[in-house]
Image 1: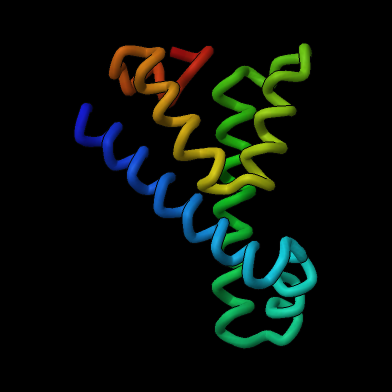
Image 2: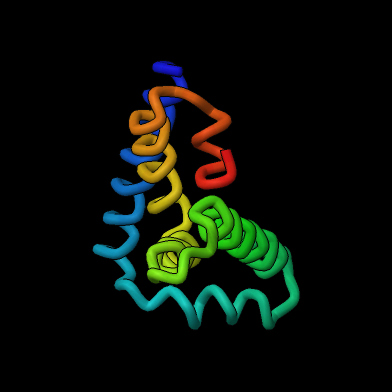
Length: 113
């Protein structure tokens, strides 16, 4: 479990650093580029559409794991998962593995464990 936690932290650090460099060089206006590539129906767009599917699955899993709570936490986390991608999911999984003391059943199933 410790190795997995270190991997999550390392991946997040690489992603955060890379994202910071991209924002510094190109600004934060991602959505027109992202959907523009999809609209051109070429390989960059295919990759973006594939990634968008993973974002949807990540958001749905996050909401499901938290029992689609009516208090708004599940929806809020799902929105952050959708728009944050791995920038959210990596630290969220790290926190869950620590909070659940490495019990992957509880990490993955949440309220359904």
